[in-house]
Every structure is written in C-alpha cells, then in structure tokens.
Length: 341
Image (cartoon, rainbow, N blue to C red):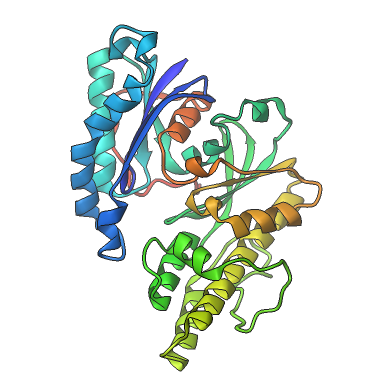
C-alpha cells in the first residue's frame, strides 16, 4: 500500500510517499526556519504563509521521485494521509485542506494522523528489521519543541499516555535557555553545540536542579529549570564563552537527566520489552547516549536523524499501521489534539 503523506503542523511543509509503512519512495521538506531565526522563534502567520507557497511544489517533488510507478500522480498512491493536529492552526489548515482536496479529486481514502503518534513511527521508516522484533509493550518518549510525553505502546493502535510535561516542553526549555545564553534559534542544536562533549558522570561547575525527577509520577517540569538558569546568568551578567559553554552543558545535563530517569522508571514499571525515542529532541546525541547506557538490557531504538524533526515520512508510516479512514467532508484540524485520555 502506497500512501501520500502531508505534514504541516509547524514551520515545515513536507510530503512523502511511503509504501507499507516502512519503505520511503519519495520525500520533500521545505522549512521556513531561516525566517524564524530572525525573530528568535516561530511566527505562526509567517509559517502558514510560507506553507501556502510551498505545499504544491513539495507534493509534486515527492510524487515526482516515484513517477516511474505510474503514468500520472493520481495512480501513484492508494491513500492520502495528513497531520490533523496538534500544531499551529493556520499551518494545519494548509495541509488538511490540501489533503481533503486530493482525496476528493483522486477518489482516495483519507487518513487523519495525530502528529505525536507520527513521531513514534519515525522509528519504523526505513527500518523493516524493527517489525521482526518483539518490541511490545514499548515505552515511548516523545520529546519535541512543543511536546514531552511518555507513552506505553502495547501494540499498533494501542497507546496509553503515562505522563507529560507540567509546564514547558523540553524543546521549549532548550529554546528559552538558548535565548537566555544568547545562543540563537533553534535552541536545542545551539545548546548542544555550545555544550560540546563531556564523559558521562563528569562533575559540573554549575549545578542546576532536576525538577520532579524523584517524584513517583511520570510527569516532567522544565519551567523552574529555565528560571534557575536565568538566575545564574543574572548573577554574572558578563559571561565568558567558557562560562556560557559550561551553563549550556549543565542545562543539557539537567534536561536529559530528567528525561532519561523518568523513561527508565516507566520501562521498568511496565516491564517494557523496548524503549523508543521520538521527536525533534530525539536528535540530541547526549540524550541518545544516556538513554542507551541507562536502559541496561532493555533494547532502545532511535529514529534516523532525518526522521526526528517534523517530516511526512513518519506520518505515512503512522497512517499505514493505524489505518482509520475518515470522510474528507468531516475532517477538520485540531490544534489541541493530544494523547491524553
């Protein structure tokens, strides 16, 4: 089954053709990140405007990569999938309305995909070996710019939300910390670059808190961590490059400590057979390193770096494994969609 997937939940405009949930036949992504670097964050109106310009060229490029399979685009795919939420409402509208139009014009079934579920399936794209493994139940850490969630995945279509952030998402915390330290946008890569590399267990000169890390629940909190960093910076308004690097390093250590500790706790509590990492922050090498070493004998799976940030391939994969067709007449974007009950 070949699925044309569309993703426009934030500032990326993406399309992909995915076969049987695993094989990526064509993919295209256009990002307006450079525009948002000037403002230090995403401006929703700017993102949506760029997506209006990019949506058709991106779809044409993705389909054009597989034109040898059919004489026209309408015969290339068996279904259309689209991110229906959560995300920026204006951006979601671009993708949803485009998908509805194609589903109607080509008379193809339509699948609405939760963006957070999509991130989970970044692990499956171009990874057919994962299907042969006994991975369920799996604990999934979905950690991105706007979301931080722990999920128990008993099987495809069977997700149970365990906990999430009580305030800022980890990605938001990285963005705010980078702004405090004057490191630019996006914050995650900026913090990671400034932090450099440090052996596991090496001491830190600047100790930041690890909020709610020892609490019995599976929730996270990063707002207080950001505040603590701001307090340290205010105490030393003129920071050397080495001091900035040290603070970036300690902030990254604090965030990843919280993420890893709660994930491992959940995996052991529910006798998970595997751990999956997903979302934009899944590209953080320090997080991958810590999670892999802390999991012990529990296998840990990571998506390829290109499938961590927003992309349409993961949406196509999620649509295949969680097929739930919807009527194009009734599909509307939901910016507040979540995995919580």
